[in-house]
Every structure is written in C-alpha cells, then in structure tokens.
Image 1 (cartoon, each protein chain N blue to C red):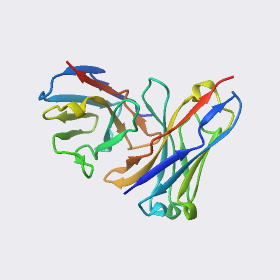
Image 2 (tube, each protein chain N blue to C red):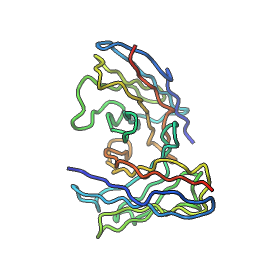
Image 3 (cartoon, chains in turn blue, brown):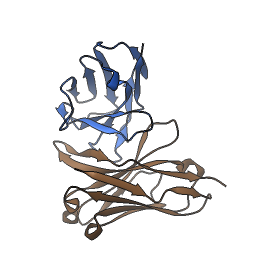
Image 4 (tube, rainbow over the protein chains, first blue to last red):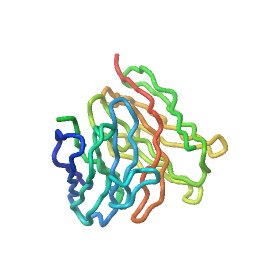
Length: 107
Length: 123
C-alpha cells in the first residue's frame, strides 16, 4: 500500500497569511494526487486533482504542486472560511489512501 | 446540481449487518464510478471501496479492512449505490460517505460527496 504523510499535522495562522501544507507519498505516484477540505461536522469537499488542477468552483487562492512523492497545497491568503482540515489522497493504485490530515486553525 | 444522499445508518450490534444506500441525482449516474469512504469519530478519512461503471462490468475494489465483509453494489435504474456491511465490528463505527468519482489525468478520484450516514456498532 502507498502510505501518505502530511506536515504539519496542525498549524495556527492569521487571516491573510499564506499557508503551505506538504504531503508525501511512500512511493512515486506521478501526479495522481487530490486535496480535500473538511470542516467540522461536514462532508469533505474536493479542491484539487492531478496535483495542481482546481476542481470546478474552487477559488484560485488554492493551488497545488508537485509530482512523484512530494506535493504541496498552498492557500495564498487565508480567509475565515478556510479554517478546516485538509487531506491529501493518492489515487495512483489500490487501495486508495489518504493522508492523516492537517488542521488549520485561527491564531 | 449534483446531489448524493446516504441513508440506512444506525445502531447495530457487533456481528450484525446493515445496508447503506446512496441516492444520486443531478448527473448521469451510470457514467460514473462511485466510492465509499468512512471516518471514525475524531479520525481521518479512510477509503472503503469502489464500484466501477457498466462499461467496466461493475467491478469493485475494497480496502483490506473490509474485504470479505462489505459488498458494494449499484442499481443504475435507481441511480443508487449500496454498501452492504456484515460481520460488523466496533471499529467499523464511523460516518460513511458516498462519493461520485471523476476520471482525471492519472486515474479516478472523487469530486462530490454526500452528507454521510452514521453507523454505530455497539452492544
């Protein structure tokens, strides 16, 4: 199985901050990586697929990059609605696996 | 508008069975793979399994933790996907989400999720 790790596990940031979350795969997955946002008590929301492509309707303040084993999700200017937990997911091979999540909260 | 509505959750004893349903609307259901993902209380997301579409003979994939106990099926005439769970364990307690899959470069991932159905396995 491909193991996914994320760092940091949590971070505190202020409105307007630029935030970067890192995701690492235990083996190369090319760009078969997605990012999801989840707010407490809510379903996940798809943000990015293929490492850097925005899902329809997702604002451009979100961006993704990387290939192989190392990936990043960047939020260019954090807004109150962005405080949430973010998960990466590899879909290169089965079983599909998620990272453990990064919780972004208010400083 | 894409909508996915799960139902069938509830309290079940260890060793018991339960069937979750996910009713889809707002898109051509038969064209899409469908996934089930779960989230134990206070924990992260865990992929449960996938149903492929008719063109791929409705084949399925499962996580090792549920293989042999859970079965995913679908009825394209009812725009629904199902998760039949048997031999349930306390560690199966979770919110279960169904998701619509999208074929993208490099594979297939989920682009829409339902609101979830809570399954509690307890005596």
